[in-house]
Length: 117
Image 1: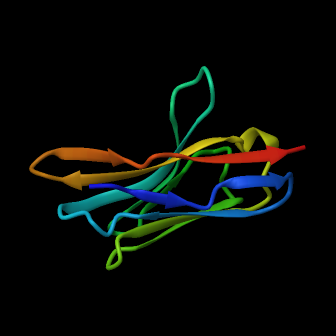
Image 2: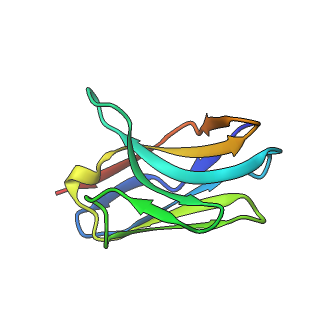
């Protein structure tokens, strides 16, 4: 199963980007969908995720600026990123957690977000 992520790019500080991830090929029950960010030399960290019941989690650094949404029927997840800061720069990975009797997760290929100061 491939996760198709899109929407990264270069933006000035204060600008906006929208990331989208398509998991329509997923045949297992989706438990959570979300986005992680990784910068060189650091571990991948959660930015935001959303459960199949619409419970949302955000990292403290993006609360009030980013909004995650999903379409359970279409199996897509989006991340609207506003008021972007240079520290938001990184490779963003789509993540999907599924129930196969236990929790298993899939990763997208990553999309680069660069915020210039």
